[in-house]
Structures are given as C-alpha cells and as structure tokens.
Image 1 (spheres, rainbow, N blue to C red):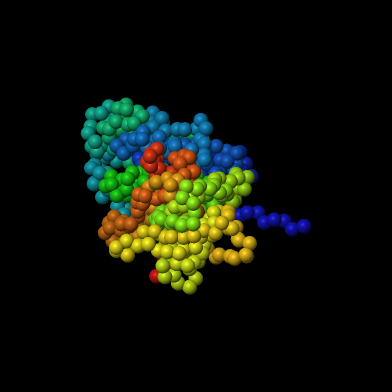
Image 2: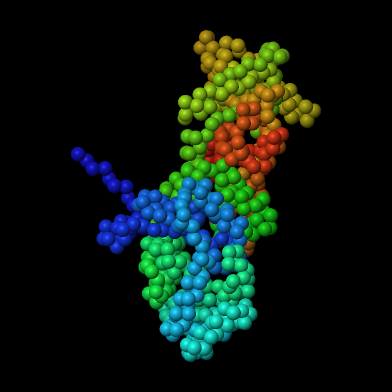
Length: 559
Ligand code: ATP
Ligand code: MG
C-alpha cells in the first residue's frame, strides 16, 4: 500500500511541530499586531492568514493586538476598519483583543526596574546627537555624556519626564547595553520618548510613550505568545527583543520568527504611500477598488476566500520576492467561477431590431443561474423586438474566423433564438446606430433548428425595453510600472491614467436589480462584477472585479 505524501509544511509550522512534540509548548498562541495608523492591505492579509491560520490548525488561539505606541499617527477609525477587515477575511479573535496601551503601566514599572538595576539612563542629547553617537556598521558608537548618570538621578529625571516637566524630545530614556555592539539596534536603544500628545485610548494620562521595540516583545510575553511571527525587517531587532525578555521579569518567553513580506507588482504597499494616494485624491479613499487595501479589494468584489487561497498558494518562506498580481486575480477567478451567478449585461450597447418579431410580443426564456451549481435552477430573461448587443460583437467587414454577428451572418442569441443580420443602419458620420436582423422561430431557446443548421457563435444580449440602466466602473492596474516602489523620482509619476473607466449607460438584464451591494456576479462573456455602495434605486453601480481572462497578459504577449 502506498502512503500518500504528507503535504509539505512551511518552516514556521515545522518549528511549531517540533516545539509541540518536544514538549516546549503544549499549544500555540500567536498574534496579529497592527499599528492602528492606516488601513490593512493585502500584505497584512498574509500575516493574518498565517497567525490566525496556525491558531485554527493547531487548536490554539490568535490575539488581535493593536500596537498603539504612537499617538500622533493613530486613530479609532483605523482600529475599527482593522477589526472589520479581519472579520471579513474570515477570522475571529474571540475575547482576545488587546492594546499595547493597556500595558503602559506595566512597561513603565519595568523601565523603572531597569533604571534601578543600572540598565537604563536618561539621555539629554538631541535626536541628531543620539543618531550620530550611534556610529555605523564600520564604527562603534560613542557613549553619551549622560550614560553614567547615577541611578537616583535617573529615577528622578524619568519621574519628571513622566510628570510633564519637559518638552517633546528634550529627554529620552535609553537602555544601557553596548555602544560598540555589532548590531546597531543594541547600541543603547531609546525606550521612552516625550510626546505631549493625546492617545486615542489613554487620553492625556501619559506624556511619555514607550518605543515600539520596547513594547512589542513585552506585550507578546504578557500575553503568553508562543511564536511571535513577524516580517524579515525585524530580523536584526531580534537580539534586542531577546535582551528585553532576558532582562525583565516577564511571565513568558515568546520566540520571534521572521518570514518574508508579501509584495505585489504594479502596486505599492507602504502605508505612507497608500495614505498619500488617499490624501492627494489620486483615489477616492482607502476603499477605492484600485487600492491594495483589504477594504478596496472587498469593494472591488474579491471574495475573502480568494485572498485566503492566494496566501496559501504563495506560502511562507524567508525569501524576498515579488508576486505577480495576476496570481491573485487567478485565485479570484477560481472562486468566482464556482460561486458567482450569471447574468447578461451589455457595456457598449448597439441596438438590434428583430424585423420579423411582432411589435408588442415578449417571451421569457430560461437561463441557468449558475452552471457550476445546477441546483440553483433557472432565471427568466425577457426577449422582445428590440435588443441591445455589445458593439464589438458585430463587425461589418469581419476577418475569417469571426464567429459573431456580421452582415449576412447568423449567430445564437444566448438562450433565445438564432438571428441573422440583414441590414446595417448608420448615421451621417458613418457610425452604426442599429442592426436589422431576422430571427428563426424554429430555434426557440437557442436550440439547433430541425434542418440541423449550426452556428459557431453565441452572444449575449438584453431586451431594450426591459433593460436596466447602470453605471459600470472598469478598473485597471493603478500603476503602469511593475515596481513603482523602485523608480527614480516619485512613485506618483507612474500612476496609470487609465486605471478607471466609467461607463455611464450600460444595459443590464433586469434581474440584476435584485443583487445586493457587495455581491459579485458574472456578466456572461465579460467578467465578474460587484454591486458598489454608490448604487441607488434609480441607478445601480457595478465595479468590474476582474475580467474573465487575463487580458493584460494577452496584450503583453501581442505587443
Ligand atoms: P508600518 O510599520 O510602516 O506602519 P506595517 O506594514 O509594518 O507598516 P503594521 O501595522 O506594523 O504595519 O503590520 C502589522 C503586522 O503585519 C506586522 O506583524 C507586519 O509584520 C505584518 N505585515 C505588514 N506588511 C506585511 C506584508 N507586506 N507582508 C506580510 N506581513 C506584513
Ligand atoms: Mg510595523
């Protein structure tokens, strides 16, 4: 009997397996630790899927912890959006929601402890002097003139910092580690800074705030995190992370493990740049469907399942790489192909008059709601004498293998009839305004007629008098440059001017009126489209989530 191969695990899950089988831990506790200073993006989704995914797989738990140590950039708006996004992605922190600011008291107490043990001191140098004194990779740093201040004086000064006696930046508390350490992060890092700023949770209780590095690991330890998973840029912060754990009376010893960040081509992911796109109105907001934010992706109509699938596909490694956005799009197509109901919609309408069809007659045809889910059954679509078809489904002078409509040619109008084009009507400028066609009553329902005649093409259509008018927004990549983060000059110079095309008079099958905001459907032959929150009773608005095929790849192959 052959044994099925065990699916290969990423290196983090291998470490966890070892820690569980060696008895080092008897369960896993992970955390997702966002700073509430922006909206989450698809990169965060990778970390969310990893941390919450491990909790699910190992029967452990995953905390949501806001690392809110920088009051000047943080806001409850961000806290709320982050919670919403994680839930939308399908994950649940249960009762385990925490804020680093809840630990400010404890962190302060521990800082006082470090001072008492001679492991921290108040420095009065300016930020610039401290930076210079730190040295660089070739040169050791130089000691601050305040490094050997007596403990009692440090304690008093730190108290006065806390009491608000000094202005922003006048003094800092630094750890006393090693000014010649090969790792710059170990050269007496700053633990506390003075910031007379109101915090979104602690108000004006504090005017000294702990630095991120001094907060993060201790928060992990206070929450009994077993595996503290972070991105590679924290690799050389690990010795400091461990120094704090060793030198403070923490209740547990988490292990920091780094993995590579998600990065995607044709977009930017840094919160600073995303904020700039929003603030300078290059996009309509954090949830603009072109944004790589979770809220943008959601508004665009990407299903959460597709994001999870995508994160699974790219996996967890230590290698830096950029993923192709078309890989994400293909996860989106896979999920939508299975789940999205089908409808007909015409984006660039041209009128068809069926000359042999009675003026006032209307017939209802059955069309499948979703061929992938036959149980859903059929929907009704109305056919009448005047129809709309897609302008590019007709060519007056077609090339050889054009199987759509052309003068004299016959095609199937999906689930209705075979129609033949007899006449082309144009305006003075030569623009086609109408096509005159005749239908064959023997092809009812789009069936082949008794004479066995066949057609190669099937096109979609909408009955003119039943059609629903809609706005449809077509999106393309936000940047024309594959790597807008690595360009000379500004990333803004590479914004795609055609990233949004608005079609204001699309014609939709009326069944689409019942589709709720946020739901994604398939417009047959065109792609997947999602009802936008800008929709009104009078005029629905649809976002193109993704085309049926990767037209970008096709276009590039052609050029
Ligand atoms: P910044 O620190 O510039 O504000 P950030 O992207 O690091 O931005 P955080 O809120 O600190 O934002 O991130 C929360 C968590 O998400 C961190 O653990 C971080 O490592 C992880 N993370 C952020 N960006 C990515 C990414 N592109 N890929 C994978 N994980 C990421
Ligand atoms: Mg960060």
